[in-house]
Length: 275
Image (cartoon, rainbow, N blue to C red):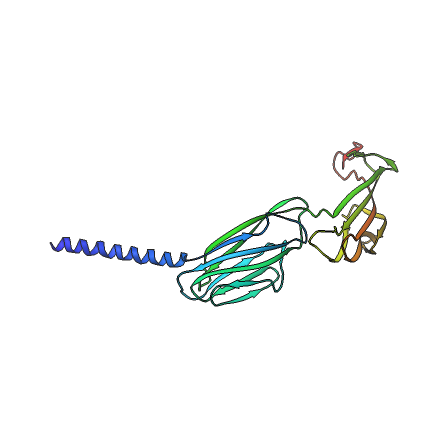
């Protein structure tokens, strides 16, 4: 009987410890967040509404909800709206924080603007976290959006020549020949999109060390030239367009050349080099 009583006591203690552990896990998991983005595709300048739904059912100190924005997004000041119990908020260009001070359901909503886009369409993930009073992440949720290249940006190779003779798209060029490109870079503020005024626009094309800028001009912008290197070669020219209103545009045209270098390898006398 004594052994049975001891065994039963041990079992009860184990069950009690398991219950305490389960309760602790439940309390940690009782703060949660759900995330939604108002669009599944966006372009440069688009404004996007982000909605976080957070629920706090157990209080063990303040619960923090933090949304760290991807680098392509910028928070729009003054757009944050929180509905629910008591709270405090902090914001910056690239994150939003809301401390939830009471039990209940909260809706956290704010706007961001797409301030940069990739050269090719890419999926961007935006994730929000819930932290407990000790700063430990206890829950998270994310949403994804596809960012597409800005349609108002184009870069065109207008013409190319080897020793002043057009060569089309040839990639096999005799060594020690001069190769020339004429490149046009255009940025336009497309009318009717959500950008409005594009502010502080600079159009730049930074050249590598083997490329030389022979001539350059700009339309609707102020030309700025940067000469660097021992030979004072021009490696960077750009158009300072200032602010572009709807339908306004700026173009930077560059004539670039280089001499195809055979290099110092064993095949430098072969007379041909992929470029």
